[in-house]
Length: 191
Image 1 (cartoon, helix red, strand yellow):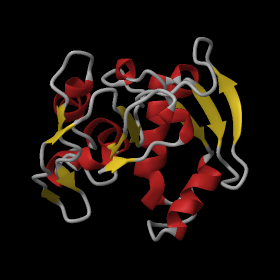
Image 2 (cartoon, one colour):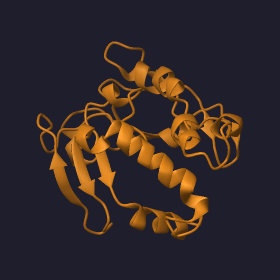
Image 3 (cartoon, helix red, strand yellow):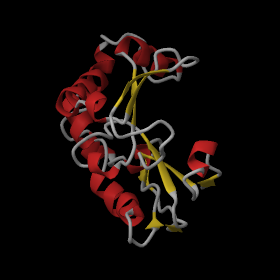
């Protein structure tokens, strides 16, 4: 779906393309090959980054075809999806969300990125309110996710790589806590 871009994106021209890493999950036989509770499995095996690059990021690069697919897998239904190929209009802006997006496989793809910084003491209860597990960050059922995120934070340091870091503990009052030089406010791009 093409979106009418917010004002800040309209100043850069083009349309916004909305996509998520969640459309590029691996099938469960890959996601859980190290075990259903494996933190390293969560970090290493959750997403098909090669497909993200081949089907979405690569085609949107300067001089590339612009012919994209936004998703290949429906994790809720646990099945591959045959989403249609789309032709991205020239000067389109990709707005891409998800976790682990500052991994080495993807970090060079982003012209601009935002890291939403929120502790497990807030994020895990938020997830539980949406019906996804225990609100206790120390619960065994959350080990895969909490420890997998800790691996990501330690290996990739997204706070240092992001264009801006937003303290998102209070959804009604997010606060920019860091801005990387060379990324002015209001500059818009992929990521």
